[in-house]
Image (tube, rainbow, N blue to C red; front, side, top):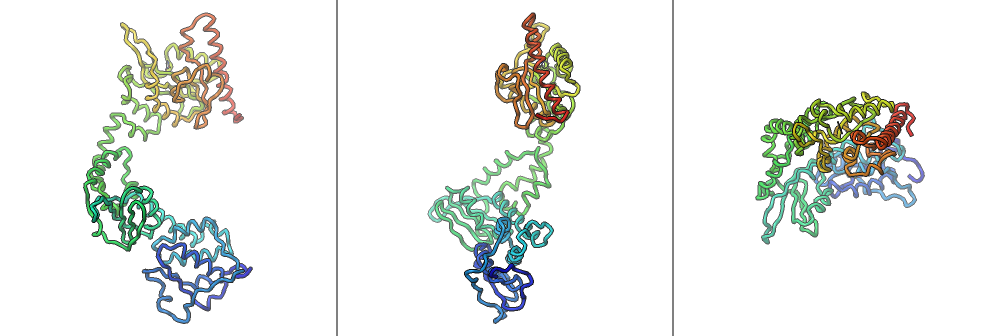
Length: 490
Ligand code: URA
């Protein structure tokens, strides 16, 4: 090509070249030959790519002697073939596809790339699209191999443990995946038998052998029962989506997977198990809740810690689902437990007054607690508030985090140390945390201040001093809310 750009207008008459690949997955061989052919300006319609053991190309097979020539050798000074990284990475996978046309397609693309280096970006180009399809299908096949190979235990001739698996890949992926299984099962002696060739690992070296048949592999073994009971125990009915499961684990693989025998029964029992889980309020069922109403419904069944048996009900938060401000207290008190709403008792009234004074509209905020049940001890007719332990706060944290994930507030106001622990997952000193925002992972700003019930317990000067401090904290929160609503974020 010596300095000239390649053109698809190169003469199509002339010698025809046949390249015989030593193995159907030999991408390196294809790449070396393809580079040389491009350098020698041999256009795609004058090359046949013949797969060893494959049907090959009729033109080449007919032995149209005189037309099939020895491969040309490029001049030393000919311009090297160019290929983008994206092309090479897709080509490496696409070369493993079982489509007999794949090497011709790759060569056509490589040829065209010389005059159009940006061709791979053209998503409408039929050749590019076909290459992407091949790549995707090969990646999917490898993924299935990683996920669905199941070893059966046998004894080898020397009486040692050996594990044998049978797998039927759609494409020529076996050798390309040898490293994966070698790393994963490094200390086992194993063989993976497939109709496209086999791999054997003895803990030190990898050996390959030719295609095998299903009957060469054992059927069942003693570890199978163990595997089945493990699978039944991890099967999660709350996550069951039959369509998605069948597309992820197509039936064709079931026959090699001992646990697959359990699937029909597990599916049949899944709905009943899920109903039980929801009634019991288990975590798995809760993971799927994605509205505040669903959360509140599920929280009614929560029995994650002993406080749940204490009060009348779980008191979830209230307010707008997309409130910019979330206010978090410690736990519902006596009044809240009876009313089923947060901050409606004396502490709530003090809070309301302070919010109004700071110009914060409670009805536009989401108000909740770190702990959803009222913890108390009975003294005569009175129910006396008990501070929740760190463990109880942490146990209840899942509910608070779920509320956060749904409401996604820009600013969070934690009232007191229990609220701060619920939000941060660790104990912080109020004194140190007050006065400046703490940025949370999801970019919400957390402001920590005192709990209004603390102010209620003070009197005289101390109360005035703390009330002023509280007001000044709320004023800072209001200023931050203003910046978000007016769009001038700092
Ligand atoms: N104290 C709290 O922390 N939360 C309430 O809801 C009421 C009092």
